[in-house]
Image 1 (cartoon, rainbow, N blue to C red):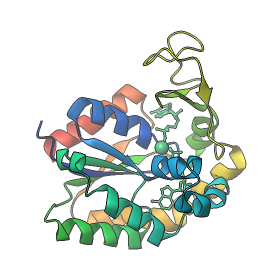
Image 2: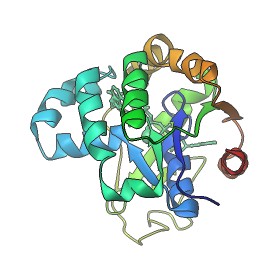
Image 3: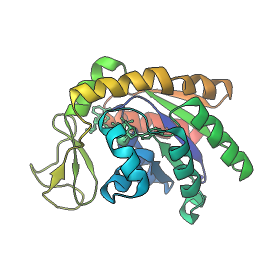
Length: 220
Ligand code: AP5
Ligand code: MG
């Protein structure tokens, strides 16, 4: 498959953006660009961006567009992005989508597709409250839907330390879902009008969602 594609994954918290972006990265060499992961790294490093973002993220609200746009504009200039990339969690508002279009047009790099992973709200709390991650390599798991083969041991790196995100609780998820519906979901229409929107059913099992996305990617 031609790996120099640039795509956006869109969907509510817990729809599977991170899970699927990692799988696409492994299968194609395209680079996963997760603004949530970038912000969590900034918070852990107590950088100026991290200090501004910490409380906003813990409350489940959106970090300001100017911070996020600046962060992504820097990141997509890095040489690894020449292999193509999967945006995971960006854009998350119309101003972010417009800024991305401008960045890509300035670099003469068209966006190939925007894939909405559609999952209704009633699935989300269980997905989010059951999520955990390997503290060493970042592999993602779920208490019910994606358990490690051996209890307490990471399938990928063998470590036995796991972590849960501070914002993965029921109350914060409800705020994140509201932010998704109010501020983020209009970007679905934005990409539909641009003629590059594809929709996959995110309520399927994880492997079937991957198959659906790989099929869409092959056609882009
Ligand atoms: P971010 O980290 O992007 O969080 P999010 O959008 O809320 O998305 P999640 O990471 O929670 O879900 P996901 O879709 O990646 O699901 P996953 O694959 O892990 O952002 C965090 C915060 O940072 C935001 O709230 C905001 O404050 C800030 N931020 C980030 N970007 C921003 C931006 N652009 N603008 C402004 N602010 C920004 O799956 C979830 C769980 O479900 C896992 O346990 C997984 O194993 C399981 N699972 C996945 N798929 C399936 C399936 N098909 N069936 C069953 N289980 C599944
Ligand atoms: Mg994620």
